[in-house]
Image (tube, rainbow, N blue to C red; front, side, top):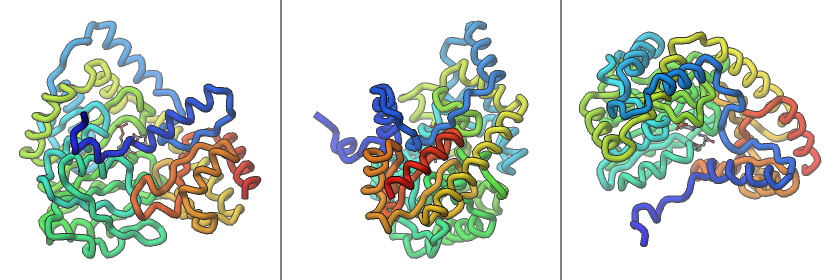
Length: 377
Ligand code: PMP
Ligand code: GLU
């Protein structure tokens, strides 16, 4: 027995590949895991301490659905100060992971039959969230550097929503102010809502991160989402958040109150420490990600594999059309080179020629991966 709605939804490819890579490693194979997007660093010590102290203090009970007041206040200040997205504590909702924030926002915004635009290859969980709401996805085109191109052409009669994700998973593309202004103009002209998933905001190189909600005309039609998984290496803690128009937030709270109830109470204390504490660890991790990106992009170029240089996140998205496309190459990577990667097709029809390689692994392993790839070529 299964509901028709769930039966149409595939398992998350990224998480499936992550589980497979772990299983193969446990069986004794020397797998280089470039599959899942998960920082390989430990959560910074002061954040861990804050979480542990909170448990010791007995903060192990239910908290308000929208989050503990201290964290909501800290996030509101961060949004206002860093992102120029005006928010008070009452406008912020804390979620168990940014994934839940995406899911809840999509459920709150879409009606059965509505359309949502995704811009080029997009993270694996957006389309299932839209499908779960009874909506459908329309794919906006991108150019060779994964920048939006002629998005207006994708707009259909029942388009209500655009999901923006800059820096982008899986391509690493960063949308500058001009690109975001074009999306803003479209949203205003066609009366669309925007969900802006900014989870890779801090993992950005040579670019400035701009929140689309900070552009004139956008604050009332944008839900801004962020989380702690990537910037603070906190994937397993499950902590994210969203802010947006009061009416939308009201429905999001209702959905959370009947599903997850809240993000874990002591994890929220760790979140306060992450935002209020020193940011040196974030800087160290970003510097290391940048060095790895440079090694990987240069290495792929030397192997003759076309690869646009990503401005953010920790993925490269090389073009393998000369080698039979992304699905075939991903399979060869695993079978012949013991490298776990994600096929570009997992990110939508525009990704079929590509493979996503996550460089959230050491430079040493990246060098080894390049040597193995050279051998199979
Ligand atoms: N958005 C994007 C683009 C992602 O890559 C991820 C993957 N972790 C998430 C949201 C969700 O992150 P989390 O649930 O771990 O906060
Ligand atoms: N977002 C990461 C990825 O794309 C983690 C897995 C997931 O949640 O999808 O690999």
